[in-house]
Image (spheres, rainbow, N blue to C red):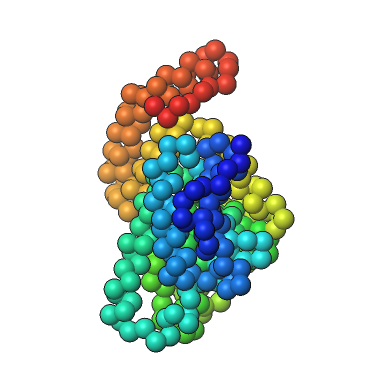
Length: 266
């Protein structure tokens, strides 16, 4: 049954819905400002992910902006007169930490443009599904600054040095299909199908054993910057740990019995 979250994070600039069991849908809700990432929106987004991270009924999260725009980036009016100490004291790393550290798989459903902080927000997710008309950019250089929420570091890890430098130093956007070929986007679908495709994928992931999904996410992220030997060791230990779960027993038994497994997250 579809339900609305009672959290305060659903009251204004971020909406949280539960369209089906195991799936949470987080919507950015500043259409009048093209979902620019105001301090209020960022705080509500942080709160929403803090709550969803510990909600055992949620196994996968879809993050979206709207049919026309994902997020236009930072709220420039709120940045124009800010000084370096003002920016430092905002501690955006703490605000964004609940998204970065969320143990649940996150799918970004991107329509329209994801620019600046919007692209950085999408890159905090684990899977990016984009509409054919979507585009991605890090245009901060055009206003005399640079990405500050992981745009340089996550982008180069996704698309490599040369593609990242082109985007970062020119500020020019790339279309969804080019972004897919570069490695920034997982899948491109018609614009009208983006959210439905993301929710269908979330449904598939939510039906998987959640402890296995969380271990996969944790080890992939932890291993990216480790040596291969260290990453393989982390993988082995996580795989061994999963053999202590009831879901492993259920999954293998269901496979032998040729029936659909019922995973409990235990």
